Image (spheres, rainbow, N blue to C red):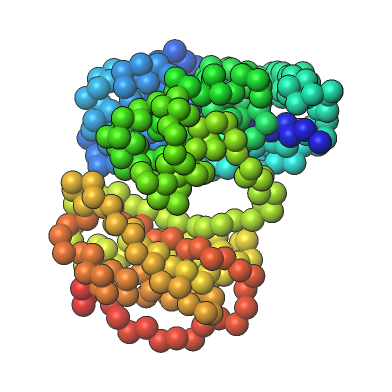
Length: 364
């Protein structure tokens, strides 16, 4: 069977929902996030704001400086999640197996419905289904989506990004190497800032440079080299994760002012632990791994975690483990801009751990 993978990606999702619900925002540079007068980051921005260079995860103060006319709207995650559920129901009506990546993005396995005489014929057979999904979302939700279609996850993602907003792109097997050639190396899955810098220093700035390189790149990026070489040629054997399981749960707080105040940090950790525990109980899960994340004023970000044989969904234990990590690794040696707690390694609830943990944040 020929593989036919689609990726649906809602266009500027948070900002588009706000513009739909408030006609006064339509056509305006909308920035979803904390106002520039407060500490925080941009969660999303409309295409009108992106023209000024505003991007997700950018400090709000920077976004305000780049786009003085920007209209800041505080995020309403419950509204976005509710909208996401409706959109994913539209996608699910096709019968395709779905791997949802986030509230606004999901892979679809269209292979069973799109089998032609060749691999590229099969990919083109997915176009009517993709058009139908886009049309129903536009008609019923008044939102636009971009869809990419290809033989694997790597190419489907790149196709979805190719002609946003409201795009529909197919990357055929015959065209994939040529399509990839001019793209920057950072466009490939798994290539972050550090890896990109290493490649560029070696004279490999584009995917085409990787394609032409005689080796498997192991000497430049270690064990990731052979996989990266495959990605550069448009080959990706990753399967869709159809388990639908929650992999992790987290909560983060960006402070209005950097702080090392133990009382403030303790209160923040307790609130985050309670929020995480409530979601664990709702989903009937428990965690074996607890993680803390801190960010300092210079945006240096550190994470530390601890894993136990037993699991827990107890907010007090999650809180104490977070305190333990902060103390053990001396993370509060200077004021924090951001503090977060996360849990992973999730399992069905079992006997809760009874380990007493006496370490408190005051000992850091």
